[in-house]
Image (cartoon, rainbow, N blue to C red):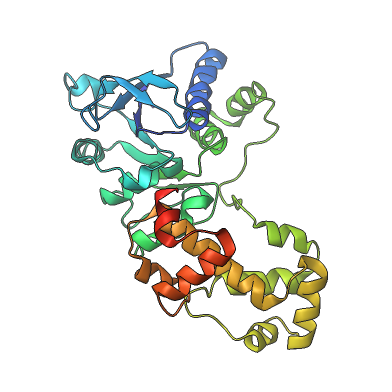
Length: 323
């Protein structure tokens, strides 16, 4: 493997500072362990979108300087790996310069991928077509709605040939440690992980999020299975007797189980799941209220509006604007 490996972190305004720092510091620590500069990295961005100089704001409002995506000086600066680092509002971000830079790098054989919600612009550029990808669990619904033909997983990270993605947060550390392990062996990766009191490198197949309700279900498989069945059928809602039969219970047994473990009947829990998904889509997509209503099992926009008002004290329009 040639060295140094040139890594480029393309920042989307509102990027996750934690996810970026975990990824960068893993490379720094690897150089330290190896005793040489095996990795070089730089921060880049589309500096004209929005025009704000070379200081890119993170979600925590800390700004970092970045070089322009469009001003590389030649083949010597071509990256071997580009990670698009996203965060809040990445689903709204559009950049022709970023899409062009990713396409150019992919054509040169670079590894292309995303960290946290940076999956949105990478997928929009077509770079995840035919590849597995993942994203932070809070954005899974909107990611699936926007890119229904993609192979989207709920794992903490995905590496599929020359494409990669991770859920953000500390999962970017696991992702980079996996790259280090591929290139320099398990012992080197373990020494780097010890730097962060990171006792093991998590496997990609690990699920990144388990709903609070399933955690509350504890060791009761019937409750967990019923919740998962509901989550998979939010648009075309299932009758409760179908849910009960699907997990091997009677409707009365299912009701008793939900009331004893979750403090509410299964019908109310199912409705709450649909309202929560609609609220997420309102904030994270540009879908119309009517489209979201139908996609979450409501008869109409007004039907959704009534339930959202009862549950969160706001209208769909107010919720979308953050009022």
